[in-house]
Image (cartoon, rainbow, N blue to C red; front, side, top):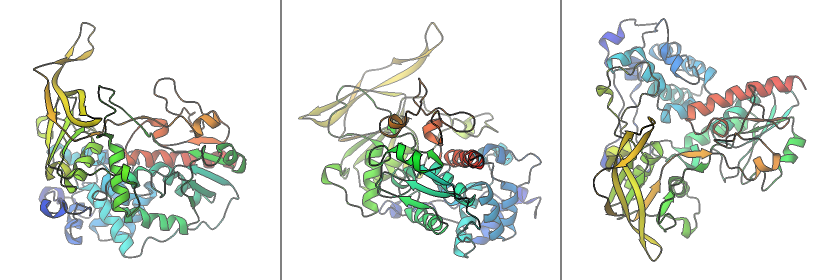
Length: 475
């Protein structure tokens, strides 16, 4: 620890965002970065606590005090090396992680945690720029073959770890490009896809094979992969979106959020999108239903398309701000109000609002009926909705349903292999070693846990890779 009193003298300093009027004109990353000197000063604020709650709060168990000290000392190479001991892709999490580590940082007691997430991204960028990060090619190959189905963060982590253990890994992806929701679900203004491509070039140089435009269970048989490989890892994510089955749901103009975000991500990447899939909100009234990050991404995308008005509604009450909570520490995910860069670009936000019906003419959406609600306990003590006030009808041209995901796709691969899912949530069931009921078939990520964070998916992939390696050692 280079400066044990820096947390007393150095104030938290964030890089902030590009100016609003500039950033809404393009899909470049909105977040800026500090210069090296300022970044080193921010890293010096880490107190090297006796009990590093930041490390406890991180699903990956990143060694924050250790690599923060290396940043402070200007040793970007060692900072990156320590980071990558526990995190396969710090350049991803350094941009899009909600940073539970910062919520559990002891300095959060004073609402001024170390800028851990920004420091993480900076360490990797320095390491890439200085040429410290090079392909890691295993010196010895085991001769074992593993197929990974799905190329989201968990699948990529499984592949990366198993390849470094010396196994021959092939990743199968049904889409045109690798990355899963990292690629098609997160806008470039949060994660430039060049960052993904840079990592993929490394992984390919290390010996990992990627097969795109191939849906296992549809285009090729899952049973053939099981037969021709020593192990399989299913990492297909939780892709079935939660719907809102109210009157008018089938009207043109009501879309799942991922339909909108995927379309725009493909256009930004200069991929072809059929005319019937293009959604243009320019000059239109937009309603985003759902208050999470995906809803926020829809807002940022609509702002860049020059939507006339954007309203985001949430069925739950408005959460408190961090200042309004008496003490949320050390909760990694305190239920506090989040305001993203997209919110700051312009939108109206309303809470405790329920959607009663979608209204249309000639099959096309023209409006939405909403009503304010209150949450009350019934006689059994269960929280129930109660309408308050009168319903209102708003003129709306587009609705984006950002209500989360419920489970992995059941048809195709899972049905063909007979992979068992739980009766309630329909997620894949595994034993403690991440092995499914099908011999040689493991599972990782959101298809097992349900929808989660990128950092959680990477952690799941790393754990599953270890179990697969242990399994292969016995063969």
